[in-house]
Length: 385
Image (tube, rainbow, N blue to C red; front, side, top):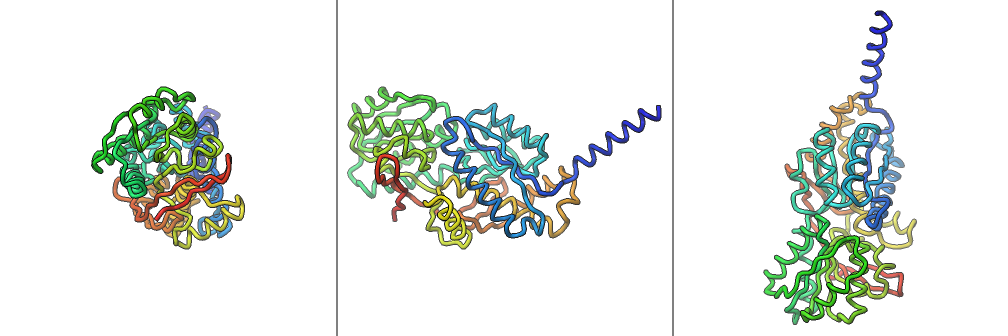
């Protein structure tokens, strides 16, 4: 009997100890390291690691370092769910940055919501993400705010545009949300949407969609998809004879599409939530460090992941000043971190950020860039005024 009681007591003590926050402070990163979505997730891994290095080099959280724990969320819902579950239950993270896709967020974020673990979406721009729950926020501006800028810029570059073809990935929640915004904007600008073509993010042959676009005599094509499928679609549009302007959605907003569509990427217009020229001190440091390591300007997906890690660290720093993080029990710290994230104001590479009561980002500056290719594999995003 005494042995049974002792065993129970030891179990209780072990459970209590496991609930205490340990240093270094664990922050979960659940983004795409594999699958075709990895073309976006690779940039997020880089941005998150750069933030971790910068924060820890400057004392971490008032002397306590942070530690990023990575789980591959790949490009599907089930993998994202598993990544979230592992970070919450096995790794005991205080919060999660991820996943890469909005489609995944709608599946995985409710896991964190039920566990009362704060989530910062680094690239989830579909309508309704912050409304998933009280513990869900995002540093990625919603597509309804960003995407219309690309169409307005296309019209400025070519005022004669009248006929628009819209092509989108029907199996991706973000692309479905984005194409809705694109179509609404086009109609509001007095343009005729002459054809709407669907495809899958796993497709590689877009002959049917391109042929329909050419037959419709479109003089502007708008593509909402991911980097691999979107890049191949752009390539095939040009190879089969389309000459007009192309607007790409946020899924094409990565230099990793350059080897996909090669010289045919040239001229694609993409709205941006980030610019390397953003004047904040935080961005100047980020750009300097990124250029030193990668010999090119940082992309939006890296900047947003960096900003998400920074926001969590800044919020933890405020909490730590009131009560040392290692004296908190994990569930209580997660709740407090969520409150502080929503209450704070943050100077990040994206500029000054705040959140509304739902966890929606409040961001002031947005941009539009056009791809300029140097050769078949190398290019850059040229920001337009």
